[in-house]
Amino acid sequence: MSAALAVDKQNFEQEVIQSPIPVLVDFWAPWCGPCKAIAPSVDALAEEMDGQLKVVKVNTDEAGEIAGRFGVMSIPTLLVIKGGEVVETLVGNQSKQAIAAKVQAHLA
View 1 (cartoon, rainbow, N blue to C red):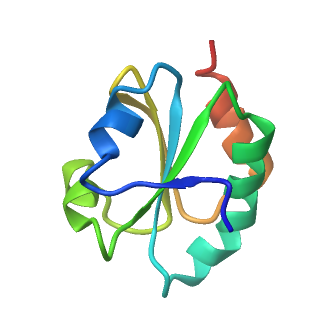
View 2: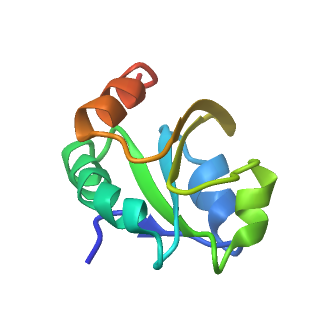
């Protein structure tokens, strides 16, 4: 079970856009190999940064309209959203250290 919260069009606005803390959004799909490869790093950050960072997952097969809203063209794509605005974008398989470094810059 993932430590990240699954979001869709019903709860995206509340969980991500209105979040009082920065949010790491993982755009993924079940058939995506690189998405599976990056998942353990994303889950580890969700646990390690709990309280400082919210981590959510968006299944692009089920919530394509959210991916479209943010111009996601390939997966995995990770967005850091702070105050309702995208402040960082990472595309493709990334190391946990690379993701953490990008996120750290936006923590209060």
